[in-house]
Length: 400
Image 1: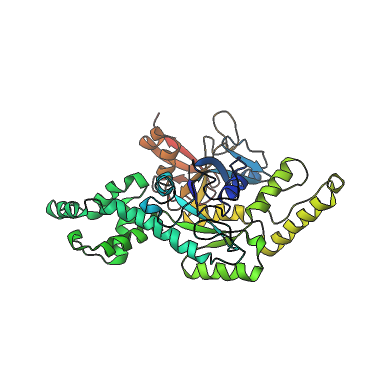
Image 2: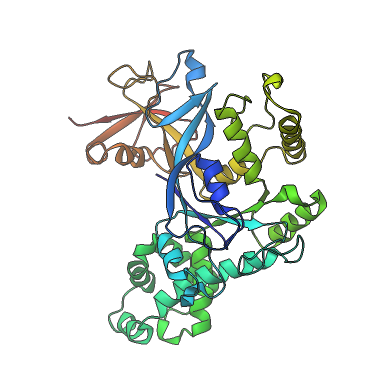
Protein backbone atom coordinates (compact mmCIF):
# COMPACT_ATOMS: atom_id res chain seq x y z
CA UNK A 1 0.00 0.00 0.00
CA UNK A 2 1.18 3.54 -0.77
CA UNK A 3 2.37 5.27 2.41
CA UNK A 4 2.24 9.03 2.97
CA UNK A 5 4.19 10.59 5.83
CA UNK A 6 2.51 13.64 7.37
CA UNK A 7 5.29 15.97 8.44
CA UNK A 8 5.77 19.46 9.80
CA UNK A 9 6.72 21.36 12.91
CA UNK A 10 4.51 21.12 16.01
CA UNK A 11 1.18 22.92 16.28
CA UNK A 12 0.47 23.48 12.57
CA UNK A 13 -2.52 21.14 12.35
CA UNK A 14 -0.87 17.84 11.39
CA UNK A 15 -3.01 15.79 13.73
CA UNK A 16 -6.14 17.64 12.65
CA UNK A 17 -5.24 16.92 9.02
CA UNK A 18 -4.60 13.27 9.92
CA UNK A 19 -7.96 12.99 11.67
CA UNK A 20 -9.78 14.78 8.85
CA UNK A 21 -8.12 12.63 6.19
CA UNK A 22 -8.68 9.31 7.95
CA UNK A 23 -11.43 9.98 10.53
CA UNK A 24 -9.23 8.30 13.12
CA UNK A 25 -8.93 10.04 16.45
CA UNK A 26 -5.57 11.69 17.08
CA UNK A 27 -4.76 13.87 20.06
CA UNK A 28 -5.25 17.49 19.03
CA UNK A 29 -4.10 20.38 21.18
CA UNK A 30 -2.58 23.84 20.85
CA UNK A 31 0.93 23.15 22.12
CA UNK A 32 4.13 21.56 20.76
CA UNK A 33 4.65 17.79 20.69
CA UNK A 34 1.02 16.80 21.16
CA UNK A 35 1.84 13.84 18.91
CA UNK A 36 4.70 11.75 20.32
CA UNK A 37 4.02 8.25 19.01
CA UNK A 38 3.32 7.95 15.31
CA UNK A 39 -0.34 7.45 14.41
CA UNK A 40 -1.19 5.24 11.45
CA UNK A 41 -4.51 5.00 9.64
CA UNK A 42 -6.02 4.67 6.20
CA UNK A 43 -6.99 7.56 3.96
CA UNK A 44 -8.37 7.39 0.44
CA UNK A 45 -7.80 8.70 -3.08
CA UNK A 46 -10.58 8.89 -5.68
CA UNK A 47 -10.89 7.40 -9.15
CA UNK A 48 -13.89 6.80 -11.43
CA UNK A 49 -15.10 3.24 -10.85
CA UNK A 50 -15.37 1.14 -14.04
CA UNK A 51 -18.53 -0.59 -12.79
CA UNK A 52 -20.62 2.23 -14.30
CA UNK A 53 -19.53 1.03 -17.76
CA UNK A 54 -21.20 -2.37 -17.33
CA UNK A 55 -24.19 -1.16 -15.35
CA UNK A 56 -23.68 -3.52 -12.43
CA UNK A 57 -22.85 -2.57 -8.84
CA UNK A 58 -19.31 -3.38 -7.73
CA UNK A 59 -18.31 -5.34 -4.62
CA UNK A 60 -15.13 -3.68 -3.28
CA UNK A 61 -13.09 -5.62 -0.72
CA UNK A 62 -10.52 -3.12 0.52
CA UNK A 63 -11.84 0.07 -1.05
CA UNK A 64 -15.13 1.97 -1.11
CA UNK A 65 -17.40 2.97 -3.99
CA UNK A 66 -19.70 5.98 -3.61
CA UNK A 67 -21.91 7.00 -6.52
CA UNK A 68 -19.48 5.75 -9.17
CA UNK A 69 -16.33 7.00 -7.46
CA UNK A 70 -13.88 4.43 -6.09
CA UNK A 71 -12.11 5.48 -2.89
CA UNK A 72 -8.77 3.62 -2.86
CA UNK A 73 -6.91 3.09 0.40
CA UNK A 74 -3.53 4.65 1.17
CA UNK A 75 -1.70 4.39 4.47
CA UNK A 76 -1.02 7.62 6.32
CA UNK A 77 1.38 8.14 9.19
CA UNK A 78 1.28 11.20 11.45
CA UNK A 79 4.66 11.60 13.13
CA UNK A 80 6.04 13.73 15.93
CA UNK A 81 6.59 17.41 15.12
CA UNK A 82 9.94 18.42 13.65
CA UNK A 83 11.94 21.44 14.81
CA UNK A 84 15.18 22.96 13.45
CA UNK A 85 18.14 20.78 14.42
CA UNK A 86 16.10 17.56 14.44
CA UNK A 87 18.79 15.69 12.48
CA UNK A 88 21.09 16.39 15.45
CA UNK A 89 18.51 14.99 17.86
CA UNK A 90 16.75 18.21 18.90
CA UNK A 91 13.16 17.83 20.05
CA UNK A 92 11.91 14.42 18.97
CA UNK A 93 13.98 14.57 15.79
CA UNK A 94 15.49 11.10 15.77
CA UNK A 95 12.11 9.48 16.37
CA UNK A 96 10.45 11.69 13.77
CA UNK A 97 12.95 10.76 11.10
CA UNK A 98 12.92 7.09 11.97
CA UNK A 99 9.13 7.00 11.61
CA UNK A 100 9.48 8.29 8.03
CA UNK A 101 11.75 5.53 6.76
CA UNK A 102 9.12 3.75 4.68
CA UNK A 103 7.11 6.75 3.48
CA UNK A 104 6.77 6.95 -0.31
CA UNK A 105 5.97 10.68 -0.25
CA UNK A 106 5.73 13.42 2.34
CA UNK A 107 2.80 15.73 3.04
CA UNK A 108 4.28 18.81 4.69
CA UNK A 109 1.61 20.61 6.70
CA UNK A 110 2.37 24.30 7.14
CA UNK A 111 0.55 27.00 9.08
CA UNK A 112 0.09 29.40 6.17
CA UNK A 113 -1.39 32.01 8.53
CA UNK A 114 2.06 32.51 10.08
CA UNK A 115 0.72 32.11 13.62
CA UNK A 116 3.31 29.56 14.86
CA UNK A 117 7.03 30.28 15.20
CA UNK A 118 9.92 28.04 14.15
CA UNK A 119 9.55 25.92 17.29
CA UNK A 120 5.79 25.53 16.91
CA UNK A 121 4.81 28.03 19.60
CA UNK A 122 1.72 30.19 19.00
CA UNK A 123 2.36 33.79 17.88
CA UNK A 124 0.16 36.45 16.32
CA UNK A 125 -1.23 35.83 12.85
CA UNK A 126 1.29 36.91 10.22
CA UNK A 127 4.20 37.24 12.67
CA UNK A 128 6.11 34.31 11.13
CA UNK A 129 6.95 33.67 7.46
CA UNK A 130 5.66 30.15 6.61
CA UNK A 131 8.08 29.86 3.68
CA UNK A 132 10.83 29.40 6.27
CA UNK A 133 9.19 26.11 7.26
CA UNK A 134 9.50 24.79 3.72
CA UNK A 135 13.23 25.50 3.75
CA UNK A 136 14.01 24.10 7.17
CA UNK A 137 12.14 20.82 6.76
CA UNK A 138 13.76 20.15 3.41
CA UNK A 139 17.14 20.78 5.04
CA UNK A 140 16.45 18.54 8.02
CA UNK A 141 15.58 15.52 5.90
CA UNK A 142 18.51 16.11 3.55
CA UNK A 143 20.94 16.34 6.49
CA UNK A 144 19.41 13.18 7.95
CA UNK A 145 20.22 11.34 4.71
CA UNK A 146 23.68 12.95 4.56
CA UNK A 147 24.48 11.80 8.11
CA UNK A 148 23.74 8.21 7.11
CA UNK A 149 25.88 8.47 3.98
CA UNK A 150 28.83 10.15 5.73
CA UNK A 151 29.20 7.57 8.48
CA UNK A 152 32.62 5.99 7.77
CA UNK A 153 32.53 7.58 4.33
CA UNK A 154 36.28 7.82 3.62
CA UNK A 155 36.83 4.13 4.23
CA UNK A 156 33.71 3.21 2.25
CA UNK A 157 34.69 5.43 -0.69
CA UNK A 158 38.14 3.83 -0.85
CA UNK A 159 36.53 0.39 -0.80
CA UNK A 160 34.20 1.33 -3.64
CA UNK A 161 37.12 2.45 -5.79
CA UNK A 162 39.43 -0.40 -4.73
CA UNK A 163 36.86 -3.09 -5.49
CA UNK A 164 35.53 -1.22 -8.53
CA UNK A 165 31.97 -1.23 -7.25
CA UNK A 166 29.19 1.05 -8.42
CA UNK A 167 28.79 3.90 -5.96
CA UNK A 168 25.03 4.00 -6.58
CA UNK A 169 24.75 0.32 -5.73
CA UNK A 170 26.70 0.70 -2.48
CA UNK A 171 24.70 3.77 -1.43
CA UNK A 172 21.46 1.99 -2.27
CA UNK A 173 22.44 -0.75 0.13
CA UNK A 174 23.31 1.80 2.82
CA UNK A 175 20.02 3.70 2.32
CA UNK A 176 17.81 0.66 1.75
CA UNK A 177 16.22 1.08 5.18
CA UNK A 178 14.88 4.44 4.02
CA UNK A 179 13.01 2.93 1.07
CA UNK A 180 15.45 4.59 -1.36
CA UNK A 181 16.23 2.78 -4.61
CA UNK A 182 19.43 2.65 -6.64
CA UNK A 183 17.68 4.27 -9.62
CA UNK A 184 16.94 7.39 -7.55
CA UNK A 185 20.52 7.56 -6.31
CA UNK A 186 21.97 7.08 -9.78
CA UNK A 187 19.76 9.85 -11.20
CA UNK A 188 20.79 12.17 -8.36
CA UNK A 189 24.50 11.55 -8.93
CA UNK A 190 24.08 12.17 -12.64
CA UNK A 191 22.08 15.37 -12.17
CA UNK A 192 24.87 16.86 -10.05
CA UNK A 193 27.62 15.73 -12.40
CA UNK A 194 29.59 14.16 -9.54
CA UNK A 195 32.83 12.43 -10.42
CA UNK A 196 32.96 8.65 -10.61
CA UNK A 197 35.57 8.63 -7.85
CA UNK A 198 33.72 9.05 -4.52
CA UNK A 199 37.00 9.68 -2.63
CA UNK A 200 36.96 13.10 -4.30
CA UNK A 201 33.51 13.98 -3.02
CA UNK A 202 33.43 16.79 -0.45
CA UNK A 203 30.98 17.13 2.44
CA UNK A 204 29.20 19.77 0.35
CA UNK A 205 28.87 17.24 -2.48
CA UNK A 206 27.30 14.69 -0.14
CA UNK A 207 24.84 17.26 1.23
CA UNK A 208 23.91 18.35 -2.30
CA UNK A 209 23.47 14.70 -3.24
CA UNK A 210 21.25 14.16 -0.22
CA UNK A 211 18.98 17.04 -1.29
CA UNK A 212 18.66 15.49 -4.75
CA UNK A 213 17.97 12.03 -3.34
CA UNK A 214 15.25 13.45 -1.08
CA UNK A 215 13.51 15.09 -4.03
CA UNK A 216 13.36 11.80 -5.90
CA UNK A 217 12.89 9.28 -3.09
CA UNK A 218 10.73 11.31 -0.71
CA UNK A 219 8.87 13.82 -2.91
CA UNK A 220 7.00 16.42 -0.89
CA UNK A 221 3.76 18.35 -1.29
CA UNK A 222 2.78 21.36 0.82
CA UNK A 223 -0.54 21.50 2.62
CA UNK A 224 -1.06 25.22 3.26
CA UNK A 225 -3.23 24.75 6.36
CA UNK A 226 -5.22 27.38 8.25
CA UNK A 227 -5.93 29.18 4.98
CA UNK A 228 -9.29 30.08 6.52
CA UNK A 229 -7.55 32.39 8.99
CA UNK A 230 -6.02 34.88 6.52
CA UNK A 231 -7.08 36.70 3.38
CA UNK A 232 -6.97 34.90 0.03
CA UNK A 233 -4.25 37.14 -1.44
CA UNK A 234 -1.73 36.14 1.24
CA UNK A 235 -2.53 32.47 0.69
CA UNK A 236 -2.11 32.84 -3.08
CA UNK A 237 1.18 34.70 -2.58
CA UNK A 238 2.50 31.85 -0.43
CA UNK A 239 1.44 29.26 -3.01
CA UNK A 240 3.26 31.18 -5.74
CA UNK A 241 6.45 31.61 -3.68
CA UNK A 242 6.51 27.90 -2.89
CA UNK A 243 5.81 27.01 -6.53
CA UNK A 244 8.91 28.97 -7.51
CA UNK A 245 10.85 26.76 -5.08
CA UNK A 246 9.67 23.69 -6.98
CA UNK A 247 6.81 22.55 -4.73
CA UNK A 248 3.10 22.01 -5.18
CA UNK A 249 1.16 23.85 -2.46
CA UNK A 250 -2.55 23.39 -1.83
CA UNK A 251 -4.56 25.89 0.29
CA UNK A 252 -6.63 24.01 2.84
CA UNK A 253 -8.44 23.99 6.15
CA UNK A 254 -8.14 20.74 8.05
CA UNK A 255 -10.52 22.17 10.68
CA UNK A 256 -13.23 22.63 8.06
CA UNK A 257 -12.79 19.15 6.58
CA UNK A 258 -12.94 17.56 10.03
CA UNK A 259 -16.06 19.58 10.89
CA UNK A 260 -17.79 18.48 7.68
CA UNK A 261 -16.95 14.82 8.17
CA UNK A 262 -18.21 14.90 11.75
CA UNK A 263 -21.39 16.65 10.64
CA UNK A 264 -21.87 14.08 7.87
CA UNK A 265 -21.36 11.24 10.33
CA UNK A 266 -24.05 12.79 12.56
CA UNK A 267 -26.41 13.04 9.58
CA UNK A 268 -26.45 16.85 9.62
CA UNK A 269 -24.95 17.32 6.15
CA UNK A 270 -24.54 15.32 2.95
CA UNK A 271 -20.86 15.56 2.08
CA UNK A 272 -18.51 13.42 -0.01
CA UNK A 273 -14.80 13.98 0.75
CA UNK A 274 -13.19 16.18 -1.87
CA UNK A 275 -16.47 17.67 -3.05
CA UNK A 276 -16.78 21.39 -3.76
CA UNK A 277 -20.02 21.75 -1.79
CA UNK A 278 -22.39 19.99 0.59
CA UNK A 279 -26.10 19.86 1.37
CA UNK A 280 -27.86 20.55 4.63
CA UNK A 281 -30.90 18.22 4.40
CA UNK A 282 -32.59 19.34 7.62
CA UNK A 283 -31.74 22.89 8.65
CA UNK A 284 -34.38 22.73 11.35
CA UNK A 285 -32.10 20.38 13.29
CA UNK A 286 -29.40 23.07 13.50
CA UNK A 287 -29.25 26.28 15.46
CA UNK A 288 -28.30 29.62 13.91
CA UNK A 289 -24.67 29.38 15.07
CA UNK A 290 -24.25 25.95 13.45
CA UNK A 291 -25.79 27.13 10.19
CA UNK A 292 -23.54 30.21 10.19
CA UNK A 293 -20.48 28.01 10.76
CA UNK A 294 -21.43 25.73 7.87
CA UNK A 295 -22.03 28.70 5.57
CA UNK A 296 -18.56 30.01 6.46
CA UNK A 297 -17.12 26.65 5.39
CA UNK A 298 -19.12 26.82 2.16
CA UNK A 299 -17.68 30.28 1.37
CA UNK A 300 -14.16 28.91 1.84
CA UNK A 301 -14.94 26.02 -0.53
CA UNK A 302 -16.24 28.45 -3.15
CA UNK A 303 -12.93 30.31 -3.05
CA UNK A 304 -10.59 27.28 -3.10
CA UNK A 305 -12.76 24.60 -4.71
CA UNK A 306 -12.87 22.34 -1.63
CA UNK A 307 -11.47 22.21 1.90
CA UNK A 308 -8.18 21.15 0.25
CA UNK A 309 -7.56 18.06 2.39
CA UNK A 310 -8.58 15.46 -0.19
CA UNK A 311 -6.79 17.36 -2.94
CA UNK A 312 -3.53 17.29 -0.98
CA UNK A 313 -3.69 13.50 -0.62
CA UNK A 314 -4.59 12.95 -4.26
CA UNK A 315 -1.96 15.30 -5.64
CA UNK A 316 0.61 13.47 -3.51
CA UNK A 317 -0.40 10.09 -4.92
CA UNK A 318 -1.22 11.01 -8.52
CA UNK A 319 1.13 13.96 -9.18
CA UNK A 320 4.16 13.31 -6.96
CA UNK A 321 4.16 9.50 -7.10
CA UNK A 322 2.51 9.33 -10.55
CA UNK A 323 0.28 6.40 -9.60
CA UNK A 324 -2.51 4.86 -11.66
CA UNK A 325 -5.42 2.61 -10.62
CA UNK A 326 -5.70 -0.89 -12.11
CA UNK A 327 -8.47 -3.45 -11.53
CA UNK A 328 -7.46 -7.16 -11.73
CA UNK A 329 -10.28 -9.64 -12.43
CA UNK A 330 -10.61 -13.36 -13.07
CA UNK A 331 -13.43 -13.09 -15.63
CA UNK A 332 -12.60 -10.54 -18.32
CA UNK A 333 -16.17 -10.57 -19.63
CA UNK A 334 -18.11 -10.08 -16.40
CA UNK A 335 -15.26 -8.27 -14.59
CA UNK A 336 -15.61 -10.54 -11.57
CA UNK A 337 -13.47 -12.69 -9.29
CA UNK A 338 -14.01 -16.44 -8.87
CA UNK A 339 -16.88 -15.78 -6.44
CA UNK A 340 -18.74 -13.49 -8.82
CA UNK A 341 -17.80 -10.23 -7.08
CA UNK A 342 -17.69 -7.34 -9.57
CA UNK A 343 -14.39 -5.42 -9.58
CA UNK A 344 -13.51 -6.42 -6.00
CA UNK A 345 -9.88 -5.28 -6.12
CA UNK A 346 -8.00 -2.20 -7.21
CA UNK A 347 -4.26 -1.55 -7.02
CA UNK A 348 -2.30 1.68 -7.19
CA UNK A 349 0.65 1.12 -9.52
CA UNK A 350 3.45 3.48 -10.64
CA UNK A 351 2.81 4.78 -14.13
CA UNK A 352 4.93 2.71 -16.49
CA UNK A 353 4.18 -0.56 -14.69
CA UNK A 354 3.59 -3.61 -16.87
CA UNK A 355 1.18 -6.54 -16.90
CA UNK A 356 3.73 -8.76 -15.18
CA UNK A 357 4.25 -6.09 -12.49
CA UNK A 358 0.52 -6.31 -11.79
CA UNK A 359 0.73 -10.10 -11.66
CA UNK A 360 3.43 -9.91 -8.99
CA UNK A 361 1.44 -7.27 -7.12
CA UNK A 362 -1.59 -9.57 -6.94
CA UNK A 363 0.43 -12.63 -5.93
CA UNK A 364 4.03 -13.79 -6.33
CA UNK A 365 2.87 -17.08 -7.87
CA UNK A 366 0.98 -15.20 -10.59
CA UNK A 367 4.11 -13.27 -11.47
CA UNK A 368 6.38 -16.29 -11.51
CA UNK A 369 3.95 -18.31 -13.63
CA UNK A 370 2.74 -15.48 -15.87
CA UNK A 371 1.65 -16.53 -19.37
CA UNK A 372 -0.32 -13.55 -20.66
CA UNK A 373 -2.95 -10.97 -19.71
CA UNK A 374 -6.26 -9.92 -21.26
CA UNK A 375 -7.67 -6.40 -21.45
CA UNK A 376 -11.18 -6.52 -19.99
CA UNK A 377 -12.45 -3.74 -22.26
CA UNK A 378 -10.95 -4.65 -25.65
CA UNK A 379 -10.43 -8.39 -24.95
CA UNK A 380 -6.99 -8.03 -26.51
CA UNK A 381 -4.22 -10.44 -25.50
CA UNK A 382 -1.43 -8.60 -23.67
CA UNK A 383 2.19 -9.63 -23.21
CA UNK A 384 4.22 -9.32 -20.04
CA UNK A 385 5.61 -5.96 -21.19
CA UNK A 386 2.22 -4.31 -21.82
CA UNK A 387 2.26 -0.90 -20.12
CA UNK A 388 -0.74 -0.55 -17.85
CA UNK A 389 -3.08 2.40 -18.35
CA UNK A 390 -5.05 4.24 -15.69
CA UNK A 391 -8.37 2.48 -15.11
CA UNK A 392 -7.39 -0.75 -16.87
CA UNK A 393 -9.41 -3.89 -16.09
CA UNK A 394 -6.97 -6.80 -16.50
CA UNK A 395 -7.19 -10.60 -16.33
CA UNK A 396 -3.93 -12.41 -15.57
CA UNK A 397 -3.43 -15.90 -17.00
CA UNK A 398 -0.74 -18.02 -15.34
CA UNK A 399 0.40 -21.63 -15.32
CA UNK A 400 -1.58 -23.67 -12.83
